[in-house]
Amino acid sequence: MAGRSSGPWDANDIAGIRAHFAAYRNARYEAGPIAFLDGAGGTQTPDMVVGAVKGYLEDSNANIDGAFPTSVETDELIETAREVGADFLGSRSEEIVLGANTTTLNFLLTRAFARTMSPGEEILVTCLDHDANISPWLAAARDFGLEVRFAPLRLEDGTLDLDAAQGMVGPKTRVISFPLASNTTGTIVDPGPMVELARQVGAITWADGVHYACHRLVDREAIGLDVVLTSPYKYCGPHMGVAAIRSDLAGSLPAERVRPADETPVGHRFETGTQNHEALAGFVASAEYFASLPGVGGTSRREQLGEAFDRIREHEQLLGQRALNQLQDVEDIVIYGISDPERIAERTATIAFTHEKLTQREVATRMAGAGIYVNDGDHYGLETMRAYGLESSGGMIRASFVHYNDEDDVDRLVEAIVEL
Ligand SMILES: Cc1ncc(COP(=O)(O)O)c(C=O)c1O
Image 1 (tube, rainbow, N blue to C red):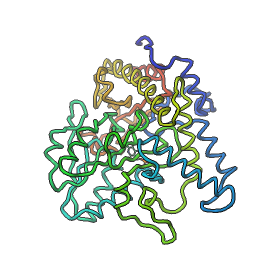
Image 2: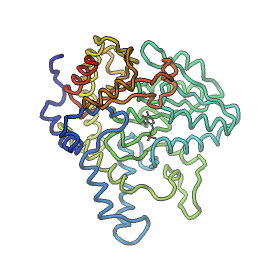
Image 3: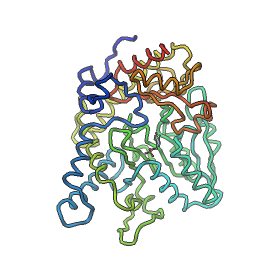
Image 4: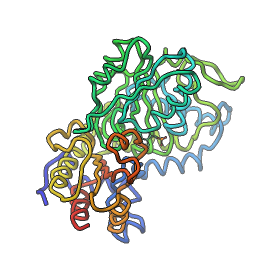
């Protein structure tokens, strides 16, 4: 196996990071160490987050708008959750929409935007998207007479074909929708050209930041995105969704509200009913977790998150390069997306591959038996699977490394594949 490479964290740091997670000390783990390689499906949850969820239910459980202390605390918690959402997404707190998950938020928000569109107008999506950023547009197109166009992939490296995308937009294009990173191939989409394309035709940009948010800090405002959606359970938080929508856009879209609810032209117009308060408490704590990572300083929460994600990127890039370097020499394995370790900056350490002699489920099952938790299937990246002709053959195996993984996880994965 390759030698150790120096990154932002040494073995002690990784041990300290893992000490935050019950998953690394529970009976299942004790029975045989597990390589948790399905971060792209959902990360493990740090104790701070678990404690905050429990703490809220035990100490502050209430509904909003009351005069009594637990209700006042709940109002404050929601405001804090918005501020935390703003710091994670590079937005302002009034632009944050809290919800059940990204898919639900996206059905809601796409529908609100579609109501401002006229029949025949167009939405550009991409073949790198998770279906949570495609089906909502298809449903809107069906109901409002719109057209959805699909920007294709360059199959050789799993990047978007920007020339083809350019040829697919025009005066009728109202939305350019794309992922900041693919949850199957790990390809990072440079948002600059997409924002520029949108600017040229007067469209808005709509980004699925779900996979990206575990690996890089989103900056909605700096990138110039109009809408971005993420799911905190993919970045060490609880199961919920958080979107940011540019405030003037949020204010201009139709929102369904119950009559007694206050009507303000900001993101929370799209929140209906009672929020998952305990999840919000966990979400707030997830920012504290990232701020506690080794070497992280900074005075504001946003600065701390920036420093945390700088280190995360550096650490994960070493893991990704190590995995790509070794997997390239393994027989019977086909890697999809960017496989050149030198191009690691253009992808996350989420690596998708197929085995040429075994079904993908067989591989994943044998891996599970060896304590290596990789996922297999289409990962809801239906268009990506179609592009590679893998829709009906079991999809791809996906090994996704996050910041609590280490070089041993990489080596165990590679050794297990070699032994198949
Ligand atoms: C890139 C991407 N987008 C959207 C989603 C959907 O998120 P949620 O489960 O919060 O609806 C996922 C979930 O796997 C994802 O990976």
